[in-house]
Length: 240
Image (cartoon, rainbow, N blue to C red; front, top):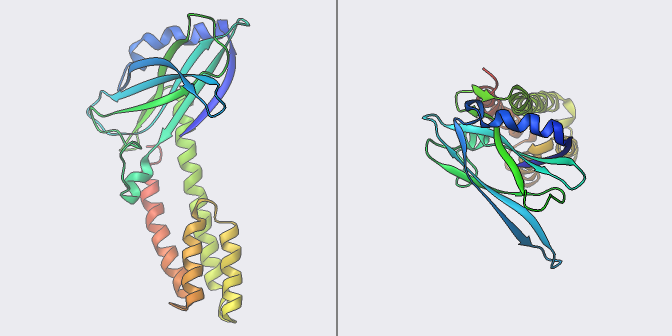
């Protein structure tokens, strides 16, 4: 989950909030409760939060979602906290999805959203709304900007994985990898440094090569095969 914070004018805020009461934002993911509270920090200070609960009101599985909470501030402007979450990887890897999604029909998820600036006394969170959702078949509904952001993140991950597979194949084909165990580890070290979120996968290969379980070339071949399968699954969740 990532939280993105921005500042908009109060006039702009009100213009954005009013349409949120329409059906365009009422389904298929619905905000079912919004509770304000103060969370005590380690410093002893209290940080204002809003606990937001969302429920899947549709008959389809939701794999990604984005929602925003908007607040009036004392200076006449407004603050907005946007929460986005994407759980499609739990489907790809058969991970324990409890608390992480995807959201099956009728299931709900809760977030503690920070109030990002001092609010007008008594106003609290002026409004929270769902901006967009993506279903497990790769289709989505909601605000076009929110959907574009969610789908772009997935496309970027797919592009990064495709590039890693290309570099693994390049390393596997290099003559240096057969020169010596040290040379093979040097190749794997370079891959590890540029593997992004897949560094742990490269580290496992390097450790197996170091222990002499299999030649590095063969280990890389196995990894490339597995990652190609993951890329195929990932591409099933791109924009339809």
